[in-house]
Length: 98
Image 1 (tube, rainbow, N blue to C red):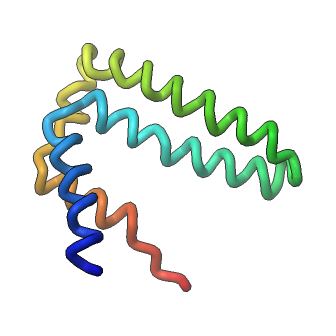
Image 2: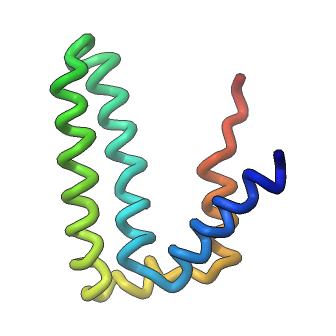
Image 3: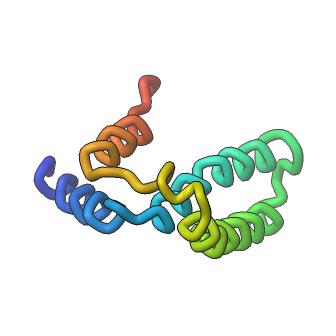
């Protein structure tokens, strides 16, 4: 099972290594997910269709914005080595509570 989980992680790290476009697009999805959670729990409980539209529209916008980031001065910030990506992915996946 550990090997099976390691293969997609290797694919993700290989795809995002040295790619500011991909890294910035993925990084923008974290705040989008948090916003969706707040909307569903606090701001608009039960409005699943509205939050689903947000969940489709904002990631598409993040994908387009990734190109702008890649062509800007921010590109160096989002150009990460594979070892750095592994650290970020492990940190992202870690959840201390059950």
